[in-house]
Image (cartoon, rainbow, N blue to C red):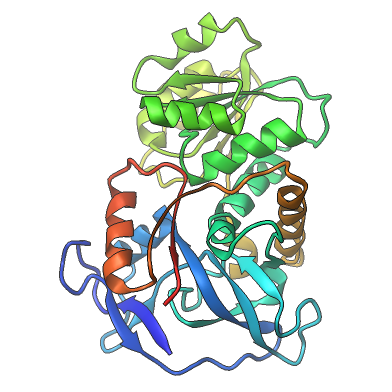
Length: 336
């Protein structure tokens, strides 16, 4: 089967930063399903893994997490899917990735593809949907329903996770959503997705929030550049608030949160699959709910651009766009 991978951690403009190659089709065992991959999307974690996790000498690592496709075969313990089912999922960081014609994934972290979406549209959603859902409901502890009238500040609202987090918060809760963005097009993107207000994170944020005359931000989802923004966030957050993080800050002065008794929460969507937690199937369940909400018209795909077919050259373009920090929504590749 065709696949795209890398042998060495190289800058994306290097000739062999990503390479096309042929490899054996994997065989499913246990809870695994084998998926014929139709479309994939590229996330910041793809670029981070490429730069930081060099495979052993002589081996090729296949990247990719998000995928949409058709179940081709199933392992003996599979009960949730059958061959022919259309699915979408975000995979595991411990296994070979989705940048291949066929891919093995544990059924417990897979959902049925939304019926109303194409494979490309569906491939944009899984990783960011899982991350946003777990961050909002599991880590920050927000309850679904319209009774919660607190203010949620989303740092980096136009990115992949922010794009679905805004929608979830607006559709499933009573929170007032303030998103941050720094360009006219990304500000419009956030408003179109349902943010009540958008402020510019390249300028002092506290004054912009105060000008909105809203309740203090009790909840903050910091999705990007947390190192840069953390002192301002500690100043903005309301006493006894909660801050959730998904990026990779190198140093945070958490003492800035002590006086306000603010709690700090990490979200990693790979935790359940990496540690085979007892509630691992929660990711299957939430992906099923996301698909239901999409088919109902409550959520929309965050696909911004189909870059091209799945091959090394096109993936290099997508990685470069992600690394520029100027991508809006999700970048997708479709077909072989």
